[in-house]
Amino acid sequence: MSDKEATARIKINKLLEAGGWRFFADGDIPANIRLEPSVTIKTTDLDALGDNFERTAKGYIDFLLLDAKGFPFIVLEAKAEDKNPLVGKEQARKYARSQNCRFVILSNGNLHYFWDLERGNPYVITSFPTPDSVIGYQKVTPNPQRLIDEQVRDDYIVLTQRPNYQSEAAWRNEAERPGYIQTNKLRILRPYQLKAIHALQRAVKDGKDRFLFEMATGTGKTLTAAAVIKLFFRSGNARRVLFLVDRLELEDQAKKAFAALLSADLQTVIYKENRDDWRRAEIVVTTVQSLLFNNKYQKLFSPTDFDLVVSDEAHRSIGGNARAVFDYFIGYKLGLTATPRDYLKRFEHSSPTTRDPREVERRLLLDTYRTFGCENSQPTFRYSLLDGVKEGFLVNPTVVDARTGITTELLSEEGFVVAFTDDIGEDQQQAFKQREFEKRFFADATNQLFCKTFLENALRDPVSGEIGKSIIFAVSQNHAAKLGQILSQMADRMFPGKYQSDFAVQVTSQIPDAQQCTINFTNNNLLGSGNFLPAYKTSKARVCVTVGMMTTGYDCTDILNLGLFRPIFSPTDFIQIKGRGTRKHNFLE
Image (cartoon, rainbow, N blue to C red; front, side, top):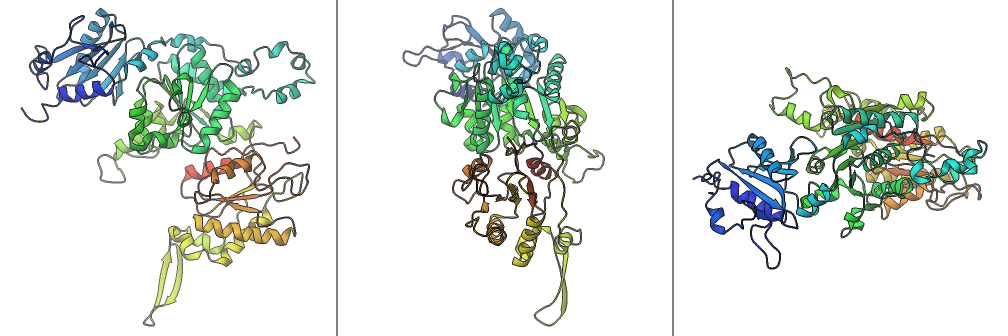
């Protein structure tokens, strides 16, 4: 027998052991695997199966995995490596029904499926679920009809924040109502947010379990997600939700948002702060990157630990290895993004751009729409920047084109052509392309021109008259340091005595507490506050100079200016950066 044929049973044994399942008693802990009901397994019984189940009469074996009380809990149908696990699913279903088991695992040692007979189809898993995880999962009996029938109105979140709001005098008095809403921080769902939730309900009715909300930056994706999470809990279709973000600062931002919206009913924790008791919470927030390190997600969680996985900035969560985290968990999946990646758009199967036969497969894997079950690049719900501007919820940025001659040529197909004389006196020409942008041509004179042009065109704060809060995107951390220095020097000349080299601040990964700088900028206390008008709380530092830290997920509604001091090659990045300046803000509040 070849080595390949001899590994199926060994692999399945290891998967069972890793999941906490035992063929034999371990001290006082009883075995929880049986070949037949009430019959204890002996070593000779396992050896008799053959390493690849070749000695079994049927070519496969049904193991019974038991619950804590010793009752049949899961049927595991184990097959030889050369057999598709799905071949015998109907026999497994029949056997599971006869043993009163709701769950089935189908495996050939390499490919495994977990099947909840009450929820639908078998779902690919990469490890076997633990007993405790499946026991928790069993407490939720899926009821899609309840989710479909649930009435979601604009006060859906308000009813959690303040259940008796309609009976309070300040609400009933229309003149006092706006103040009442603001004082109690009540979040009323906007019409398009309701449409998103209703679209999800229709998708569930159509039998779908993956959804994608394509919503422009500033349209309240987190609020919409909170309403969806409440919908799943209220309808009995979830007992725990995983909320994936792609940046550390977004963990805290998401936790605070859910606490403000849902804390009366649901507890939210950040996984890294609650490693030992995260199971007590209904919403667990974590970064994709922290789970990817050493495949930590497989050790920390079981595939059945979460009934709903929500991926913030979904266009990032499925790229590279991050997709493995997303696909690890079974159950419903919701993606949120302003910039889905459409890798199938304008792609001709008959004339691919490379000879690699796997190009189609690669594009399918990376395509955000396909990942979330959306065919023909149509998300479950879409609400664009133009929709938000048209309906008065967003503002469209005004573009000031201040390109220099050098930047224009660098971004052209030919590049920036320089004539020079070489070492032997010959006339030469050399073209420098966009990737050499900072290295070759970010001379002090160019940077001075950029900064001067920016300050001359920057919008002013309508209350204090100072330069409006701004974010500038540099080519590199070194470039960000140069720009910060030049801007602060210019600000000293423009506003004598008002700044002490604290007009512009570098916010990059090299700077200690850079994440806290972004938070302080949002809270209007970065390096001080009220510099022009003591009673007016706005950040003393007016410009954050960054490279990539503040491109996505950064919420600061009073940003007035964005400076693109580097070429933006990715349409996704451009839309994300532009989104930092599309939110409305009332400066008089």
